Image (cartoon, rainbow, N blue to C red; front, top):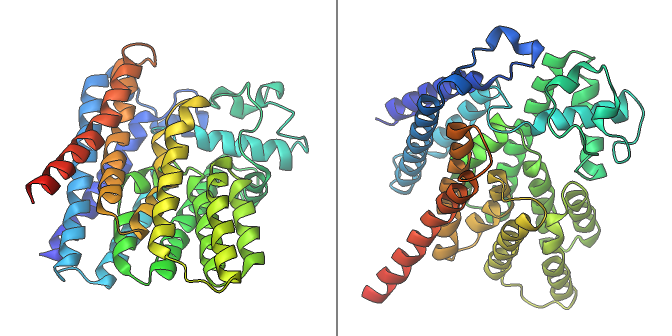
Length: 371
């Protein structure tokens, strides 16, 4: 039975990977042979298919989770599922839901090819560059810290000027960090269940392996910092949290906790690690909820709190985190269906984001009262 379920899962991954090419930008000349216009000419059908995929992937997610708890799925089986995620989705179209990967590539190009400062020079200033036709937010300087710019040097340089190779390299980079983040969660927890809850989460899979967002890199360094501070290696911990902050500044929220842990370690006092993970999850969720101050809540921001949510043992925090990850993937639907970010899209986004966690909260409180 488990082989059939895993085979079906692989089949749906393959279908989703093929479905992603329905969103190819007509201005992306490098993928012109894949352009069909389906995503804009059949918005209702495409939106419905996307919704079905999200529901199906979460059904598989909870099935794998349940099977592992009932010893019907082994660690080896789970590793195969993780491998399938990587091997199939690395070939998906990365701008299906977000164009950020093009900004990553252009920022790297500004620094490593044009030898200009991406924090001062905008992509739009390079008139005639072929990337401009499909790069969104080309009128903005680099939005991410210097750690990220330096890391992107490797996939960009190894692209040897070939856009297809370069974009594959960036997808490979995200895939590698997905794997090492999963490994780091296991190193910290010494338990395989948190790995399953995080690594098989459809939001993590889609936002990392399809869209290639750099949040997975940021959170890997944060987890490394947590790991080394637990080993009383303050120097390494400081380096890793600094690397994390210099990708995106949201992990600044974790610094007070790491300082507190370092203080307890130096004082030879016992650290309650479950509380540490709990507070990390809460603080990163706070950073997530405060993100509209800068722009808006983006689905991939859930990667900030999910690793800590799976490490801690408070069921309410875990359930709310999982329900948020489910809800956030539906934030794409209003634009996918309406073709605009104007009203009523923002209202629908807010409703689909916060209704599932609210339902889970009410269910949890109600079930506690009944018991």
